[in-house]
Picture 1 (cartoon, rainbow, N blue to C red):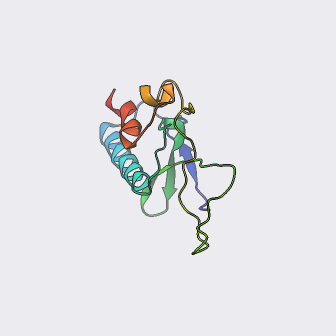
Picture 2: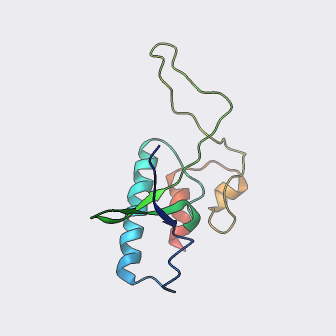
Amino acid sequence: MQLLEGRTLAEGNPARKRLPALEVVQYGCQALKAMRATHGKGLVHRDIKPENLFLHRVENVGIEVKLWISVWHSSPDVDSDTGRFRPVLATETGSQVGSPRFGSPEALRGNKVDARSDVFPWAL
């Protein structure tokens, strides 16, 4: 597990009330890149919000946006032939996960979700 230093986007920077537009665009692009990588692994986050975007300070680089993901299930799904873990759905259709303010309508209703559900809050 990587040690992260910084704060969440929700915590912000107490010295500034508002982020400059260029910084917002940079953070947004990094967050979208993280979401693309997550979706590439077959995962749908279902709760993209400022509290789950961590602004990690990297020396001599600046800020890297990290997307926090919690994946849990009752038992690991292991491929009996290879002994490797198989990707499994952390939540299933019918389970309601996410924050009402940031969730897509289908996720909040417990309907089937896909990568588009993670982009919904950003389109508002």
